[in-house]
Image 1 (tube, rainbow, N blue to C red):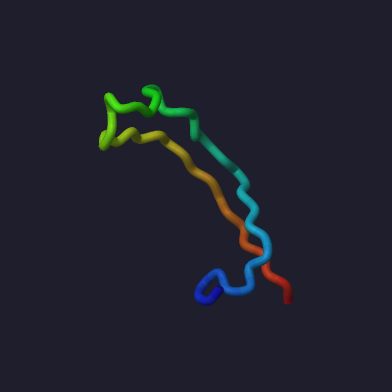
Image 2: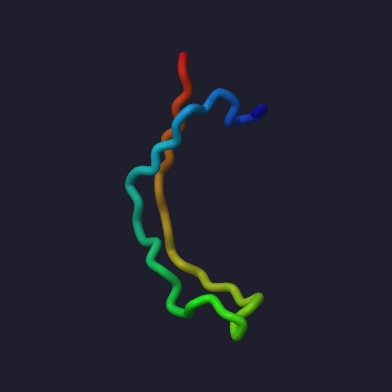
Length: 49
Protein backbone atom coordinates (compact mmCIF):
# COMPACT_ATOMS: atom_id res chain seq x y z
CA UNK A 1 0.00 0.00 0.00
CA UNK A 2 1.22 3.50 -0.66
CA UNK A 3 0.13 6.92 0.52
CA UNK A 4 -0.90 8.14 3.95
CA UNK A 5 -1.55 4.61 5.28
CA UNK A 6 1.74 3.16 4.07
CA UNK A 7 3.25 1.15 6.92
CA UNK A 8 0.22 1.43 9.24
CA UNK A 9 -0.09 -1.84 11.15
CA UNK A 10 -2.92 -1.02 13.59
CA UNK A 11 -5.84 1.41 13.75
CA UNK A 12 -7.46 1.99 17.14
CA UNK A 13 -10.88 3.64 17.48
CA UNK A 14 -11.37 5.46 20.79
CA UNK A 15 -13.80 7.96 22.37
CA UNK A 16 -16.78 6.85 20.29
CA UNK A 17 -20.06 8.73 20.59
CA UNK A 18 -23.38 7.96 18.94
CA UNK A 19 -23.62 5.44 16.16
CA UNK A 20 -27.00 3.87 16.88
CA UNK A 21 -28.74 1.88 14.15
CA UNK A 22 -30.90 3.91 11.74
CA UNK A 23 -34.58 4.23 12.67
CA UNK A 24 -35.77 2.68 9.38
CA UNK A 25 -34.48 -0.70 8.22
CA UNK A 26 -33.02 -1.11 4.74
CA UNK A 27 -35.43 -2.46 2.17
CA UNK A 28 -36.87 -1.99 -1.28
CA UNK A 29 -39.23 0.73 -0.01
CA UNK A 30 -36.34 3.09 0.79
CA UNK A 31 -33.79 2.32 -1.94
CA UNK A 32 -31.74 5.45 -2.68
CA UNK A 33 -32.88 7.30 0.44
CA UNK A 34 -30.35 8.76 2.81
CA UNK A 35 -30.44 8.25 6.59
CA UNK A 36 -28.20 10.37 8.79
CA UNK A 37 -26.91 8.89 12.05
CA UNK A 38 -24.75 10.97 14.36
CA UNK A 39 -21.40 9.33 15.02
CA UNK A 40 -18.04 10.57 16.18
CA UNK A 41 -14.79 8.84 17.09
CA UNK A 42 -11.09 9.49 17.40
CA UNK A 43 -8.71 7.20 15.52
CA UNK A 44 -5.10 6.42 16.44
CA UNK A 45 -2.86 5.04 13.69
CA UNK A 46 0.20 2.96 14.59
CA UNK A 47 3.14 1.92 12.51
CA UNK A 48 6.43 0.33 13.53
CA UNK A 49 9.44 2.59 13.99
